Image 1 (cartoon, helix red, strand yellow):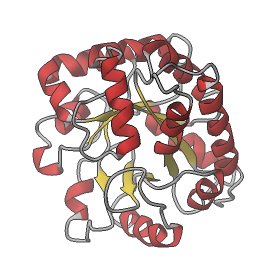
Image 2: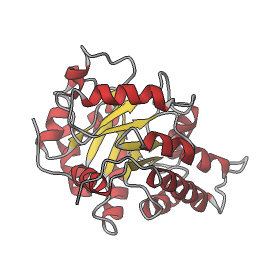
Image 3: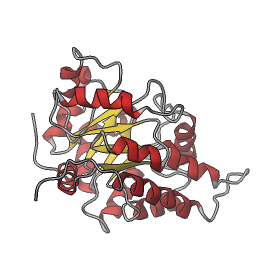
Image 4: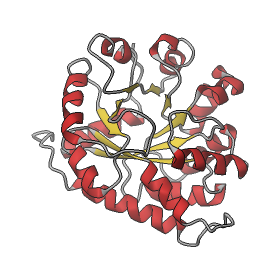
Length: 284
């Protein structure tokens, strides 16, 4: 089951033609507040992000580590909602109609919003796909299949524990790319190992033609460069969220260097990814 070509499809074609992996950055919508978050979003592609994961704040983000959990709670406290997240994407699209945006989060806010209306509003806002961590393939009728029918991408997570018996079921209706979680457990808690991940990326590619992005445990430009040699995309989240946290005062005030610090790290990570020679480019 496949739909029309999406921004995500086009971006990975472009990356393949350039012979390099992409940098996928994660940020929580509305963290530390809507204004600052919007400024980060506006600058993140110019700083070198090839795809953007925009986290939808949720009160119980069970797959996320302390840093992203805290960012989600900050965003909720600042008044961020799913509807405002879509509005944020719509504003971004007025300036950038090319960079893919993937909403990442949990099913509860979407269910409350109403799936049919959510898909209409998300597409209209300029969202390209979804990563919904608590909807396994067995629940594909809830959101995955309606998403594909709407012409958007639904990205599935795989893990080191996803064996060859399970993989075909996971990738059957995946679209856009496959997200390989390189460590077991929650985000931002341990460093990933590129050699271990390379084995799993190769295994995933034996089951699917989709690009494979690797995330969880990648924090530095050096690590990003290492993973860019083995995957089609490198996902960095907690390290960027930590930059926001580091700029907060003890009373929660937002430091004046927040946007610059986050975008500065994005530029460094992009340099690492773009400096890695993958040898995957087209002959042209």
